[in-house]
Length: 113
Image 1 (tube, rainbow, N blue to C red):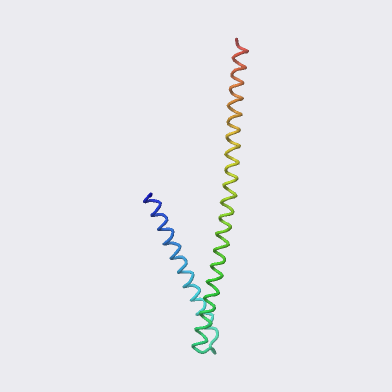
Image 2 (cartoon, rainbow, N blue to C red; image 1 turned 90 degrees about the horizontal axis):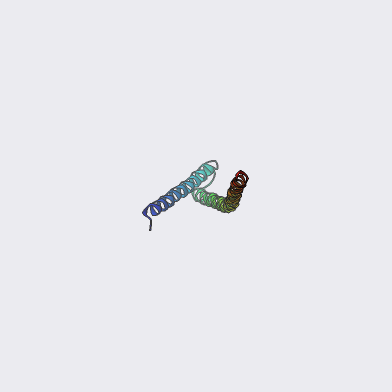
């Protein structure tokens, strides 16, 4: 196991955890601001509305992240395929160029003799 890769993976997981917790906390803050606009709610109603509002916001955030993740995977696959085609074209162009230079050198050598 590569300690650098493990460290990078651990940091990425920690970052994801912290970002998700920040998103959940933001959902709670928004729920609180929303219920502040409804002063006629009882305490129990306010808590229920806050819970439902925050859960809905978190679900929407999760769905958005899943869409972004799926799109990122699609783009990665697309760019990998393009890179493979480009690499094959460059290799083919290199082979053709080497062949052309070799042929030209051979032709010049034969003409000079």
